[in-house]
Image (tube, rainbow, N blue to C red; front, side, top):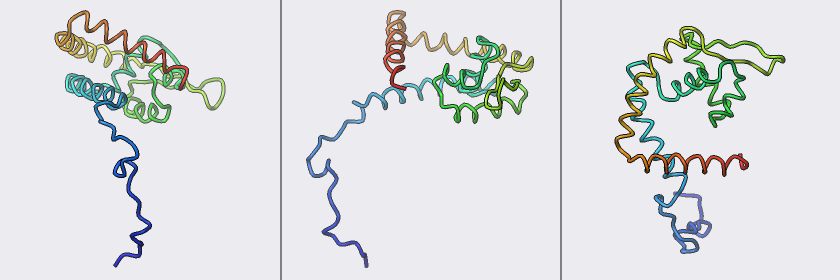
Length: 162
């Protein structure tokens, strides 16, 4: 027997007809995340041969381009929460792909690719290039330019609202 009085239960605003139900396909966040997961699955499948996930490869590639950078700045560059970045760094550090050096204070640490990390990045880069070519066949050059332009515009618009 329930102690909940049936009179205290209320209908949801959607069930009560107070607000229109949202079609999940109209949700901007859902659409972008769905497309991102689909692309990520393709990239992860390709990178399996180098025993990296796309999130790890992105970090290695960013470090190959940026050199030594603070973990905070890397998180900012990749638009990733610093805590999530730290979790993603752990296996890369464990495999000796990264070098971490102390900064000017106890809170700041600099991160860079080790020699082993540079080799791993070069190895994975070949798989990444193959995947990029595969993905390019799915779109026209015009479509790709529009997608990249829209993504850049989206990031620029959101930048001030972080």
